[in-house]
Length: 390
Image (cartoon, rainbow, N blue to C red; front, side, top):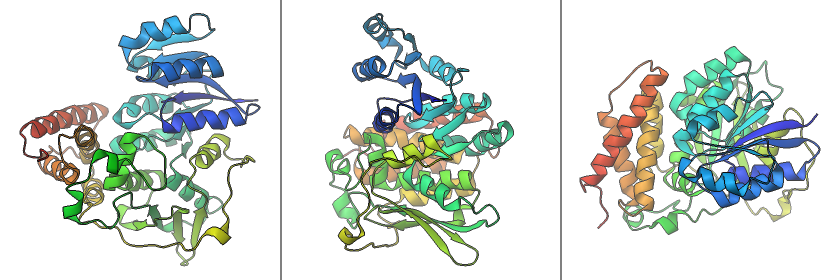
């Protein structure tokens, strides 16, 4: 039988590539649900092509336009965040692909796990904000959390068959982003366009900026902590500019397993959708004769403080990773709109975290309150002009 998929965030980079994987494997997968927040034109086109049972547009103001455009199609159309969460728990859904960006992915993922749906997880912020809650609930419900991020997919693959051999260390690789090697004075003058020019990966704007600041790697470290049960001290970030080794696992005998492949997100997407089977494909293969060298270096925690801030936040635990994510989302938006400089992203987040009220064992309500209050405090701090560009 075909695996029926609810794709949350179908118009983003991961969403579009997921649909490409589905289209290449029509005998294995079918789309049951498509959701997007704003991009109605692309969502409507996807709905016409893939004929899902349900479509949800997150922005309720755009509901009528999507409904009218699809009135000649056998597709149910809904709107709003609650409808996205409800779509994720439909009985007809076998696998929920969470490709939404940022905090918005938390509630639908939580509801899907509560309903016993397996999750193909591309929304790392869900585990950054509520990792303990999500992973505990997944264990209780017998839900598989299948990582889509290339790094976590690599770790997941390296651990396959090693059930009796716990990992000693995770080596989380990092491209270094577009500003690897730049000094603080150089970073003060970079523009959003500069930051969006990633050397290896084609991603959405928010995750591309996170990659440039190394916050993306900080989030991935927190995600790896929850997915694979290693302490943050046992997760080492290694800068690997070629993005060929997607991550590695070191075992207690000193052996290291690595997963390699071209920087192509369709491969980890297909692995998550097809798991536990590896599905044949015609994606480009590595040609080792064309690889001049694979290099490695330590990350620069002085000029790229976000990675250090992430280690600090998960080290303290509680609601601080939630505050980290909320402050980062606002700071990235402010940088993209040229309200603050690139280095000010870290300065702003650091100041917010130093003032954040600490909750050791947060409930969902605590996390929602932390998210809302942190966003507000971050926006107010930006308005003071203290971090304004000059």
